[in-house]
Length: 294
Ligand SMILES: Nc1ncnc2c1ncn2[C@@H]1O[C@H](COP(=O)(O)OP(=O)(O)OP(=O)(O)O)[C@@H](O)[C@H]1O
Ligand SMILES: [Mg+2]
Image 1 (cartoon, rainbow, N blue to C red):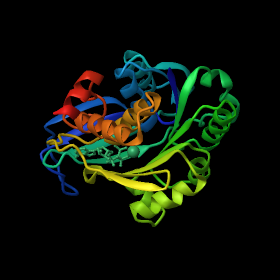
Image 2 (cartoon, rainbow, N blue to C red):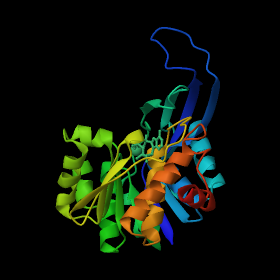
Image 3 (cartoon, rainbow, N blue to C red):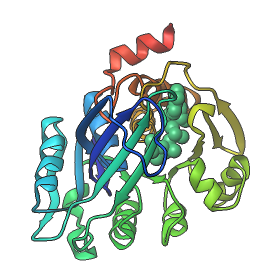
């Protein structure tokens, strides 16, 4: 079954440092590299590694970054027919500093300067044959249109709620699965469990708030449970949330129960953190299942 995703795609410039730098200093990085990123784009790459067919929709500029973003998706087998390439401007880029001591990442990013996906550019053809639609809500109008279209076509919608911004609550109300970050809960001025209750009020199938290395909490059918992280020595947590969403979607497609789904997503995301960058470390299915058993 195909997964459709509409949202952000970025080019990440990653600097790997011994420790987090001080302001107004020069620091030689241990390594510098460039790879594709963005919540929806990386989640689809992770699904592709699990053998799921994926189709991405978003915007890039016709700049070098845009070409690398598209190439990064195509090399991973993610469909890019619904990516709009606009003339001029700049694609979304992010500068990421990884603290080698803790594996934590600090992200400085800029959304594309080209016109976001227009409502008229979202159509049923993109959703044809999809078993689920993933959104991250940065492009509000296009995301709302896609969510409404999916509803009409009886395609479940998952929202990656990373940050409280205009349209996010409306999108959450239209979503069947809401997988939010701790930052999103903080934006609502709620503790994670209170955020679950708040987001569950539209009666979705499940709501999860991820808490970085503190794991995650999930609401399902009026009950809440916690999932601890799989303890690993994190090299780089960039993209952990995106890969968690990919793993979560995999469980939903396989119709696994919610606990197994969240456990799988956690293991999948933890393994990703063993290698630098948002995508390099994304494991295959076999490796993830073996890691869970261990
Ligand atoms: N250091 C870590 N060790 C093991 N697992 C981790 C670690 N950091 C994150 N994870 C796993 O990944 C999940 C998602 O991480 P997190 O909550 O940081 O996502 P996020 O805030 O959406 O960030 P982003 O989308 O930028 O990756 C966590 O719930 C956890 O299961
Ligand atoms: Mg996230």
